[in-house]
Image 1 (cartoon, rainbow, N blue to C red):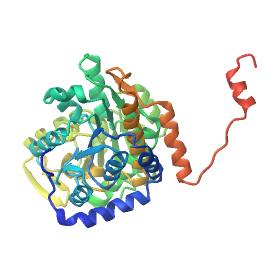
Image 2 (image 1 turned 60 degrees about the horizontal axis):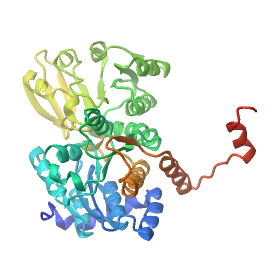
Image 3 (image 1 turned 90 degrees about the horizontal axis):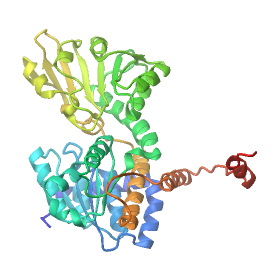
Image 4 (image 1 turned 60 degrees about the vertical axis):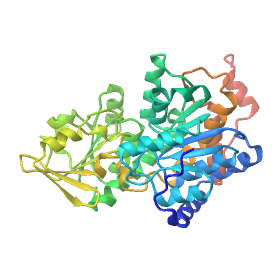
Length: 416
């Protein structure tokens, strides 16, 4: 293994404090940690984690190590990497390769350093490690038992590769689990994205027109929070069912070219490429706020924006202004990176508790079943999904009813 990449080893104590705080607010992982320490499910295995490298991710990595795994960690986005958390993980004996503000070339190098672990299992965020394994590190493929994918973007990439018959190991679609999209995508994205916009701009949401591009679970969460804060919400969609769903939620639905004329704030939440292009920049109001809540900054055609602008300047920390030929200023948050990560602290700990519980239990599932899983994209088993929900309720001190035997029989018996 390459030496650890750690920018600020002196910040280890500060990082440990952050990790301890999130641990106190992640009761599901606390319960799983007890089981992992006792059973040592990952003894003798190697696990690579590539997710936004901050305190919540650090706890997931520590949890896997507690279960017996040798763990390497790298970041999926340089602007979300916390150098103090990196230092803390290095002190814990993990292999860590990340630093805040790394260039794309350095990020690529760090991922390759982490892959030198020769992982049996990969916890991925956006599919970058899966792609690296297939495109550049094919010699490692025989040792990879499977991957667990966190995001819509990563799942789409894996499904496309599987459809072409080119996926060389099973991928568990954590993103499609009910405990992922109902909590992380909806509640987590909704709160953290609006938090990023508010903290960065220090502007009011109430009374503004907020355009949400994409009405999947993440888009729904953003629309719900914006509406709750008093915004006039417009939704733009390409899926007629999702568009009709937005309409039934009392939201305005219209084509993007019309919506950008009215927008005070534009949020892209699609996972797609170049959703906002030059023809849209030309039509926007003066002072519009542009923020990306999808996975990659490709949602904006940033090259077109830079070429079109007469002038650029920093309007405020994390806000880049672009002067258009028509005299209007467009304001891009966080350089087009994920606004909840680049401009805030990401999802709350309680939200990532459910998502990382799914990840941890899915890694366990791969470890125990990799010999029978085919090389395709698999849903998280229903029992794991329900177990995370049960642990969520237990950790919150909440108890629910159970069906009586005769009630179960009634539901299963067509004759009654």
